[in-house]
Image 1 (tube, rainbow, N blue to C red):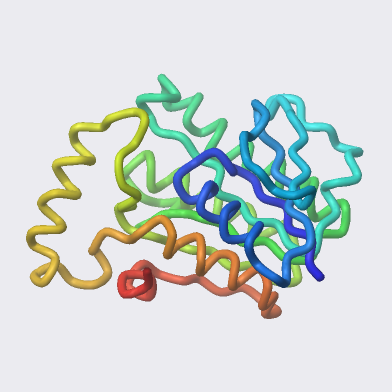
Image 2: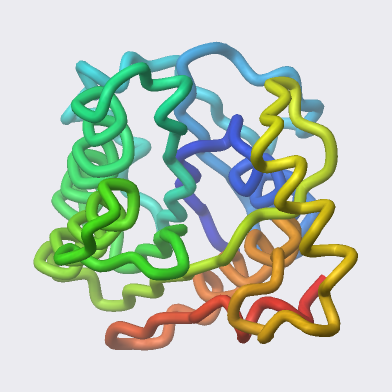
Length: 216
């Protein structure tokens, strides 16, 4: 049976990973550190440490897992500045990944973004690319990076007009959009991430958005 460490359990993708992991027969325990307690019935399979991501506990025994899945991330609007955005999408990811590896966790699955590139002119894609690049240096036995396009996860608690308009147009024009750029269901990203964590294939692999577009 497998213990998984889930980072970012309150987000769109992370919430779906949590749901799938708790229902998966191969997963015996899910450790999901969050800022606030999760309201999730888990029949004792969920360990939910409440943490401050600015001061992660380096010696917590729950850093040691069979696999870690990272869906940490924010938006520029919620972060309020480029520095705050980078702190979450790069620094938090690297710090958590480093602590997990230091504790002996051999497998890491990272949710990134289509177009992630440390040399990108786009600040968002550059930060995502830098996070990918730096996680690669940590030395996981198995590392999977998932790069979804625009996420289609239904209504958000924080309405985003631009995203809503983009999704509406993409749904209407879906047959005309190349698979690489089609919206991807958050549940599909979560399913691929959990599968990669449980397979634990040695080495590093990147799963691009076109491989997710037909998954539900």
